[in-house]
Amino acid sequence: MTLLAEWYDAWSEELFRFAFYRLSSREDAEDVVQEAFLRVAKNDPSQLKEPRAYLYRAIQNGCNDCLRRRRPSLEIDQRLAKEPEVEEREALEEAAQINQLLNKLPEEQSEVIRLHLHGNLKFTEISEVLNLSASTLKSRFAAGIERLKKMWNN
Image 1 (cartoon, rainbow, N blue to C red):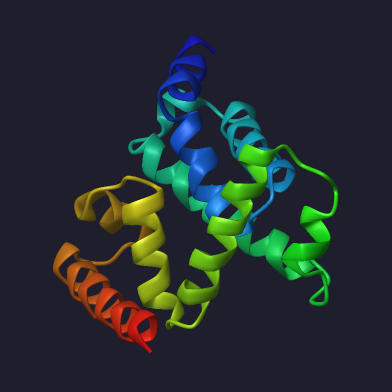
Image 2: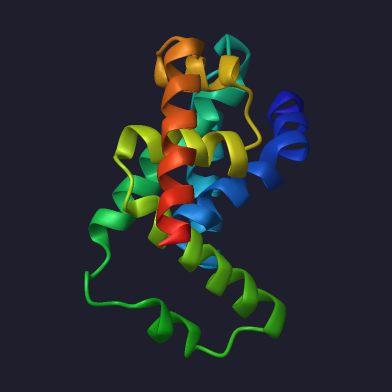
């Protein structure tokens, strides 16, 4: 369990940030991160070759599951109506704007951008998470950023 505690101390903040930017909800992001660590705890953590990549993949899948379960009509304004603190509300609004733009991109591009920028992962690390070559990921990232720039300027 000390190994798992070390991983939690080292990566939980960046994993939470990645989930939060995907979900725009503190509670959902915390749940997804906790579930990922619980999944690792149920098995032997020392057997994982790439634990950070495994956790990112588990969180990515957890976020996808959470988004599928949500009611489509639940808008960010309704979630903000729960009176979060000013700082959290601003973070939610920013996350919503970013997600709105990222959601307009093809999933293959938006996922690479999210993992690289919000997850602070290097392309070699994303390669391990998505099982794709780093050069493919760099191409998707560059294409996605170009599309975002065009959307921003329009």
